[in-house]
Image (cartoon, rainbow, N blue to C red; front, side, top):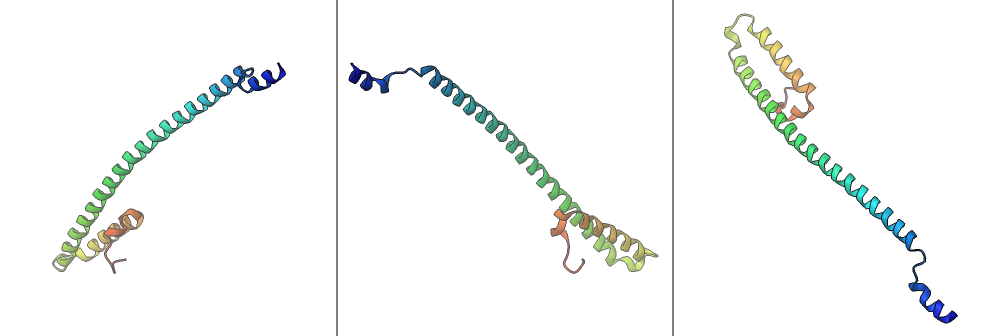
Length: 115
């Protein structure tokens, strides 16, 4: 009888409630991790959308600064014909340069030798 009990004891389930409790606990942890993963996925999606929006804004700002620079350069080419035009254009150029300096993402719009 003792041999039979020893042989059958690995298959006995005296701790079944504890196994079920542990199983439930693991399931709860898996569920919690799954919820955190879903939340992170939503954040990543939001960040991705924000990143696209920011890149679009940067492209628009860059185009505008480039346009302003080109227009200002054309005006500078004709400055000799305007009274006090040189000082006014110099002031505009300083403001445009200041805008570029305050906006690190516009570094690629700067012309070599201008800064």
